[in-house]
Image 1 (cartoon, rainbow, N blue to C red):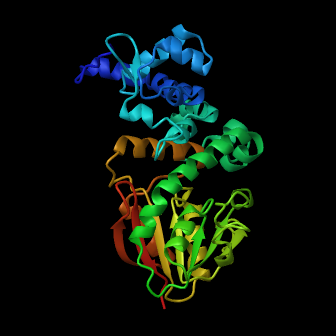
Image 2 (cartoon, helix red, strand yellow):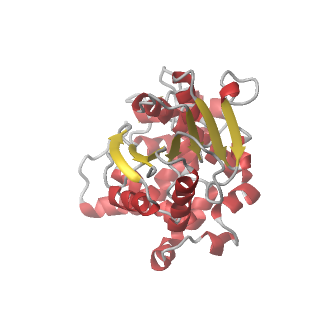
Image 3 (spheres, rainbow, N blue to C red):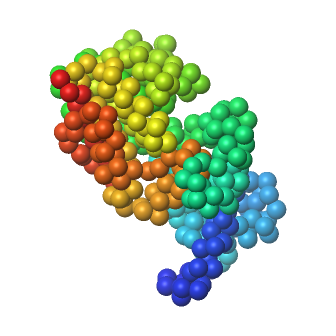
Length: 342
């Protein structure tokens, strides 16, 4: 049975940390192999699981033993393995599954980028152009289409998990139209339209993204009659007028892209329109290890950053928005409820 020391001494802890890539790689391997899906409610041996996922038994046992050290799976006294709360999150059929988030954070390009973090810290910019000769999103969609699909699945999972919380939070009394800017596949928009039967909506995102919009929003879907799908880049132009603009988890690019997006919204929005900006805050999170890691990854791949409350307020004020309220959406997200000046 695997045991974990609750309070390792500093030297041991530092040794564990510098081998952090092994833990991330082990999670990725388990997610790609489908080990969590293969393990049901009954304990199973490494041999049984190896047969189910088509691997060799001995190395699979080594993988499971390593993961159990971190509370991902548990090895019992008789040598079988059982689920833990964390290992269940790697199952595809688990509500709020983190399988695709786990894959996204460990995609092949990440292993090329992380060793150059010192360069990004020195320069304050992304290392992607130097690594691949092009920007992150161009690389993703042109040269790493499998990774782009993982990204889309990860963002879909994340959006679905927060869409219900956003719909519950926002009071849309008197609102006739909503635009989801950079809204991905439109899960937040679909949630709002389902809750408010008279609301009309617009989804704007890159052409490849909106081509795979939530089926509820596409032709033949139950919400299609109340939706306009607009392919475009909010950093270039936002050809949408609405009573309410939703901007969720996209203001993490480089500063100029963030400023341009906010300016574009303010320029097109009718006077008095409402703008709700939803983001993770790096200075107000129950999971600082995760958010600070994502902050560094954003520096590496797009030269971006997670925001503090102060930095986000500064960008909004600079764009001319009037901040009316800041509300928690859930444990990880905050909503900045703003208006465009009259």
